[in-house]
Image (tube, rainbow, N blue to C red; front, side, top):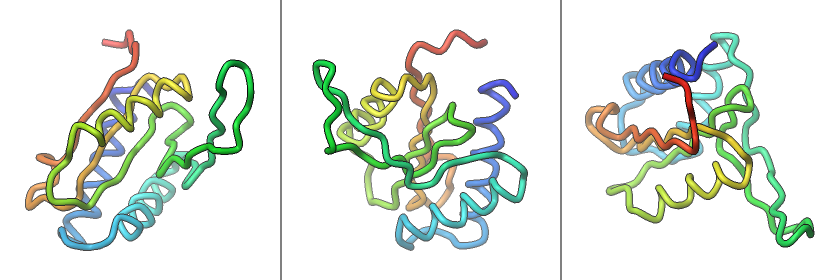
Length: 128
């Protein structure tokens, strides 16, 4: 599956979750429901997957957790906040760089229309 197709499937599943639940809930609820939708669609993912940080060749035990790592190619960072800040985009870009992933989706479920809350961030992706 191409990145475009996979990201489209993720966004479609997120829209389904948002249609069912609406805005105003906790991030963990949206994460769980989105993971369920993706699994039901046969899309492999890792949920709350720990990723270590390396600094000058040394592995630090101070890693981070990815909300969803879909097919180990697309990182999905889930928010349920009033306004997405630049810091949230920077966080996802850092995750992309540290994992070597090419594409990330920042999805804010606290929007009346979910598509207004989806941001696509790219890290060296060459696919059309």
